[in-house]
Amino acid sequence: MNGAITHIQRYSIHDGPGIRTVVFFKGCPLSCLWCCNPETQSFQPELEFRQSLCQRCGRCVEICPLVAINKDLNCQEREKINRNLCNLCGQCVEVCPSGSLNSFGENWSLQEVMKEIVKDNAYYRRSGGGITLSGGEPLSQPQFAFNLLSECFKRNIHTTIETCGEAPRLVFEQILPVTSLFLFDIKHLDSDIHQKLTGVRNKTILNNLHWLAEKKVNIILRIPLIPGMNSKKNNIMGIAKLAKEIGIIETHIMPFHQMGKDKYQQTGRDYSMQKVIELRLSPKGKEVILATQKILEDSGLIVFVGG
Image (cartoon, rainbow, N blue to C red; front, side, top):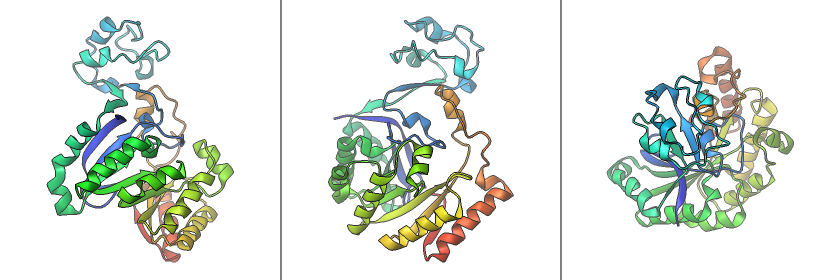
């Protein structure tokens, strides 16, 4: 069985302890407004165009069988590909000499992914690192996620999964024995607001979080902190109370940033967060982070800013 993967990031010092290899899965049941990996949202393959790398050689125009590539070599980034015509054949990617055209969502076999993972075995051992499944939502490809976690677990490679929690209980039951750490995202406790921000209600997410906590597994609660959306005091206090009630002791604040902005244009998407402040880059934003941190720490939680 193959998995749809957008990319594999080696030597990461985020998303779990130590030095890690992060495998980004394609597809997510949520569509968070602030998502910094929009290329992982859709379950279908996608084509990316990065104008800054383009040499304007015209090879992509010449080879496209459906005339889906704009003949104007100086067109705007979003106008490069007619996505209604493109069938994702990949011929333009193959002939592009600069890498300005890229395909997201290629099928990887278990053996191919493991070949990348084991390259850094020495770093895992020395740093206490391992692999992290991210995305997208890894549990939206449950069998491939389980196979990958199982193979790493057999090799004594520390396994972490970053999840939004929106998956059937049976999936969590399957991966539980082969997962060392869960990085569990909490966006908002109000289900109506959660739906407005992410496209889905939070009942399944909260039920899965409670179930995992009952199993006494290692969980770090992660809060994507988005000003004006989930940063209000009552929501943060509610998350702190929930964490204490179910026995979670560590939380990570993930401050909003604009680093994923260009990806929206490169994949032909609209981006609605242009005017939202980057929390770490402004005095007002830093106040929001500190206020959130204080609420969580005053509740007795261990708090880190960042992953």
